Length: 544
View 1 (cartoon, rainbow, N blue to C red):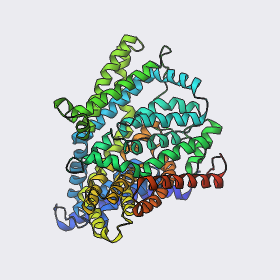
View 2: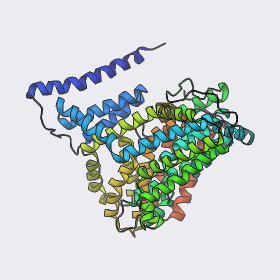
View 3: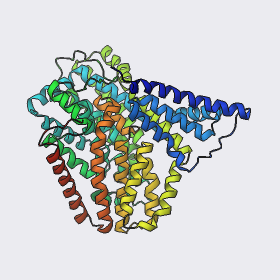
View 4: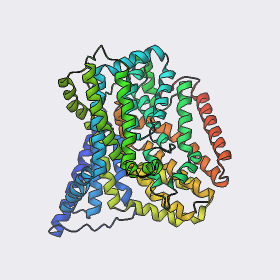
């Protein structure tokens, strides 16, 4: 039965949307025509209002598309000074069209469509079903299925997008048979995507971080910062602990209990992106799943170093540092699609007609993720046009000198907030890393800690944010309702973030990895044991 509170939500949304259109119409009538954007809100706290509204609405209404679009409209209104024409032009021309037309974004969209097509092909060829049968014979417990998911996520460290969708497509049959909720699977995928990439020297994330450091010392700084990346390292420890102890809390506990006792891995909320379960080819083999994935990994690595100039004479490390992830993933996935196409024809597990039918099906399965990504990119464009980056930069530079020893913890919090509100880790790197290096020289140990705090905070905010592309990809990979994934993951992420914050306070006074990292690990394990003691030994505790 719907309560009065739930009935008011659509009315609230309708009123908000009407206001966003009526306000600029009023401004247009009073001014008698279009006006140039006044940008009164440029480089002020108001520049963060669009993502704050979008995130708040998404968490309240559980509807991400409308929430993102309302946030985009608010950004357009603020930028144009509530001018009707200016709002429309900025939202659609400078926002949606520009985001979709961006070469790097188009590359990611092509990669998603190809990967969606490959997932459909692998399912129809019987590769996924064959792997499920093999896994059922070798993975007997829920803990084993979770640990296998974590291990696969760790092995696929090249790129977070690739990680999310590949791990999801491979492990969904295994997790479903082990009665692991899709919400838990989405968390495991998300927690082994960005947190793994940010501590892997050979990854698209290492290349992104390195590009923000001058004098060619980016990769050297990245490697030195790994032991201080507390959020990423502690997230791995927490995942293993949760898998071994069967400890769940917050909204996740309800989903896990429902999956464990009733076999309902969706808790009644099936994702619209889920493809229909068609009869798979009974002649499928595990190789029909493994070979395309191996080819995809190799092709994507080659594609990334190709985009970085490896075949033009650059060294491997330099080529990876200069790589364009979107180009590399697009080219690598395209090559893999052709190889997989030919392989399935030779194996005769699929006909030519069946393979071509997978193309529109794969595209259709990725439409929700593509739509959310497009809106998330547009929302980021709105915050950029309002000077959100410059505002945060001004705040950080103004207070950096007063709290030197506490700066790692402060940088961690700022990076969390900025990445959460904008949904991008790489943008946060570009803002805070140059500022940090401007305060501390590269040789200062505290500077390394601060850079690592920036990377950890960016990943933490990205991990929590409902408008983050990685979070969106994890939902798509697990075929889990997106808002459900965000709500169930948030308590876990915040637990690790709290311990990481304390660890960065300690590291500010003791910038030595051999001391700070063991202390951080001890704090994380102690916190988990305390939670296990109070929540119940080995029992998931359902949220009241």
